[in-house]
Length: 149
Ligand code: IDP
Ligand code: MG
Image 1 (tube, rainbow, N blue to C red):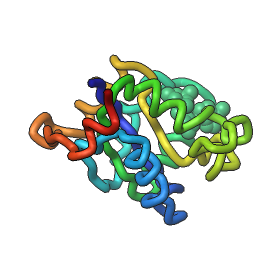
Image 2 (cartoon, rainbow, N blue to C red):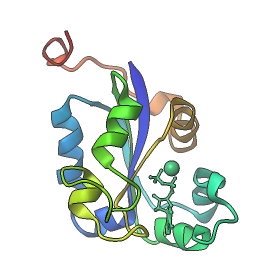
Image 3 (cartoon, rainbow, N blue to C red):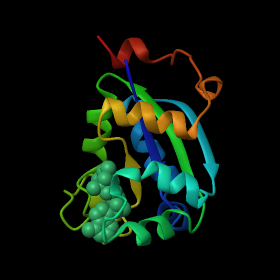
């Protein structure tokens, strides 16, 4: 089983999309093993997005992500990183396919609703930034034998 980090960005929270987005992951069969709402401090935002430092959109990205609360979570499942990225859709909502979260709920690349880790390594790094090890819950969902062969 693999873990990935997902964050519902301030626009998702402000637009009342938390429930709809989380339910997509739950229905898919992904297991939520940690979740919290928080207002991200600048320092944490810059750490999370360090790979984008120096890019033209960096300041706007940090302002956006710190502008209102977010919902951070850890999802677990087979190939979770890849599966979640495909549910999330392309970075630019105007190019994201209908049926993906960004394709269904977004219009602008600077307001693209959700973050998801892009690799196993990023997932581990991002999970450790937002959660302490003891905040990750190990449990078996009762439908696991029906979700996996
Ligand atoms: P990702 O979120 O799909 O992994 P990244 O390229 O890692 O996309 O970019 C991180 C975030 O930075 C995006 O989700 C988006 O919020 C923002 N971003 C990326 N490119 C642009 C841009 O060209 N203009 C404005 N914001 C951008
Ligand atoms: Mg990225």
